[in-house]
Image (cartoon, rainbow over all chains, first blue to last red; front, side):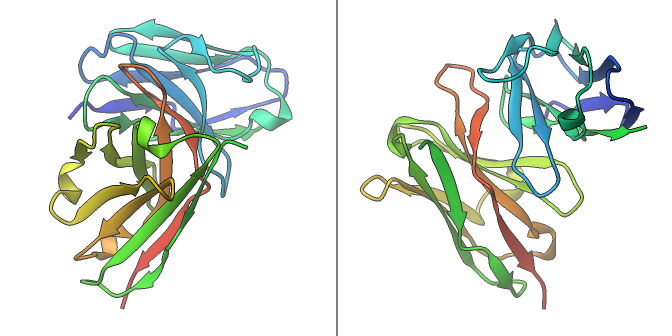
Length: 107
Length: 119
């Protein structure tokens, strides 16, 4: 199975900050990576797909980059609604696997 | 409105069986990659199973032989039959649609249904 590792596990930041979350795959997944946002008690919501493509309706302060084994999700200017847990997921091969999550907290 | 609504969760004893349902609206289940995923309390996300438009099915190794994914096209509904349930199967179970592409991600999720396996 492809292992996905996110860092950091927890991130404290303030409204207006620029933050970056890193995701590493245990083997190359080309650009077949998605990012999801999850709020407590809610289903995940896709933000990015194919590493750097913004899902329709997602604010443009989200961006993604990377290929191969290293990827990043950047939020350029944190809004109050952005405090949540973020997951990366590879969809190159079964079983599709997720990172362990990064909890973005208000500082 | 395009949405997925899961049902069928609850408290079940170890070794028991449960069938989850996922009713789709606004699109057809039979034409899409339809999945089940789960999330144990306080934990991350785990993919469980998929059924393709062709009817082909795939499972995560820990669910093979115990879980069965299926669909009823006339009801536009996805199912997950879970047998021989264990405490470690306790989780919120989500159904999710795969995006329409060769390599697909999960572009639509239901709100989930909680399954608790406990005596």
